[in-house]
Length: 518
Image 1: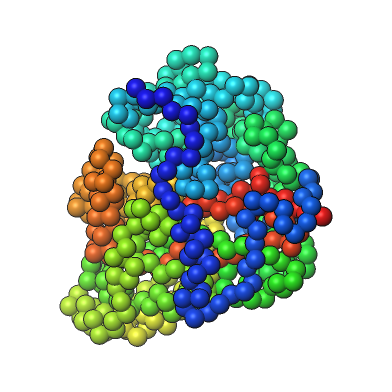
Image 2: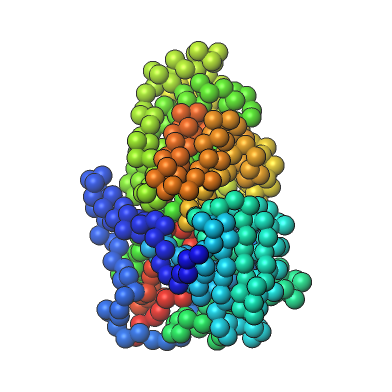
């Protein structure tokens, strides 16, 4: 038995890699961007910190749900709820985990069981105490809703006034990353309308297609934060509407990429480098013809020029990658996949010919219209695929239609999207390609992949587990599960009198440390 105080557990050393990529990459590409000049938040540099105030943040998508125990939420939705809910542990900026609802834990039997001691005096947003019964309810509900990774739990047991024991079906020393799922009060039957958590902000109101308002949590356990009194997410139709809102002053801040950055005044805004911590890809439906043929999928890979996409659609800001894992997870990232399919039009045509498509074929690329960056990417890819005789067309759909028809219904041929991970673990990126995973929206099936991935889940030896994760990436690349493009490097535009920004190796926006200056 090993007693541990939860601290920054070194799962990945990713933050430096992310920041380095964001700041160095443009120079490596011969393009220097002098517009980013953000303070990390370590201290007040440009003025006196002013407690209170509000930030209106423009957002192009709405959360699919306000319930942290609903597994169907999107990356953007989880980014918002990061400020509202906390798990037994929560991610920190270094890629480790820090205490949240739990203050310490005991690891038993080489990772077969975890015993957590809950934080003394912790309260929910409504002022009620957090109890082991609330934790038990939250974890069991998340298990029932098929949260990724929670199917490994065999039992959740209350072992004391402030203790909860999580027993797994098999030992797993990496399992702590799955226990960031939000803890909620067991007596709240309407979690969609009453979002009650323990996070630094409380959801005051939510009006669909208009705004979501968060206010400071007076009961927050971490003293001194948040600094802001209020954060309002203002929902806009698309990236162009966000640009107009930023320029017109109806929102204070927002996430921008590509040409949008060039159209904002650097005297008004601070531009904070913001790796998406997600994988942008041209996802191919492996179950439809002719994409069910490996040779066709490989041909498309050889026809897509990733650097041209980054230069044309993102003004040179991006890190090309041919892996299903983000480069920032450097410990697990298979570096040989930086460019596994170098541009080779002749080889692409040869592969199509061998598959019986010498004259090419038509391909419909479905793109969520609210993401200008993906629409711009699609336009570049259409021109690239035309060089090998593939007549690609773009089908624009709104975000709800993309979620229902593409992600859930799998009624598509190809689509451009960025996929993230709900946890700071390679599993969060790789699990979706397992043939039995319900999030496998690309319909990828590979017995070899399933075998390697399953082995990684149960491997105790860390070095061997890392190698299995790398082998899984190599299989996805060799079998051309999709066309992996990049980890998009965007920017968050904030007013000049705003500081305290932090970055995570996860797709989140943490408003707790952000503050205004006088």
